[in-house]
Image 1 (cartoon, rainbow, N blue to C red):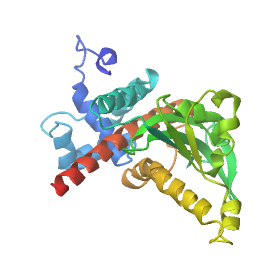
Image 2 (image 1 turned 180 degrees about the horizontal axis):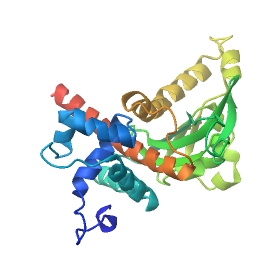
Image 3 (image 1 turned 120 degrees about the vertical axis):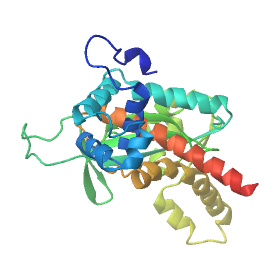
Length: 287
């Protein structure tokens, strides 16, 4: 995926091996490190040098080299290609199924201060209100395989984009059911989803669920259906938990949606591999 775009050795300075730079790029995402912090870590942490196939006996990549590799991926949208390639491999291996899709979105905060060189906030980011709190930034919309909990679709938008607007872009077309929270109410009536032939397992709005619970015996079946919907869609939170809790990604690092989409694509690729590793370990413990 990356090799056709990676610099070849010529008369000038020999580039670092592609595998080395990709391993460094992965570590940046695992530990939420800036280009400069990644350079420092290579000097200070032996295990990171070992993982990158480097040693102090030779020159280590500096922050500019690390940044240029990231820019290469951004320029050619190679993180997106990695995301698709890894997912295709997981599907061929029978790890990622197609029976059902869980959809959700999360807000990623961006710096809202105007105390910068341009004296303005990022024009590609926007604010939105969730609950009683305002948020400024972007939104990551994902489609997740209901069986494995692996992310198969990703769309990055400004934070004020309504979740429903991207629903069609999160479906792969082979699912038999779609599960979502109450924010996706009205999906079956959307014109662009009219030909989507699936069972819609969309949660009722909190107010209606609260009303149902006022008469638990009378509404036992309806309440149980809501519990069933909740248990099915709970797995959609796993990828978000991995990138936020395991990888420490809680705030947009770059300006503009394109650069941040590249980072999100890489994060969800690595989150899928992290999840597969969890599945393998669980299987080994059960043997």
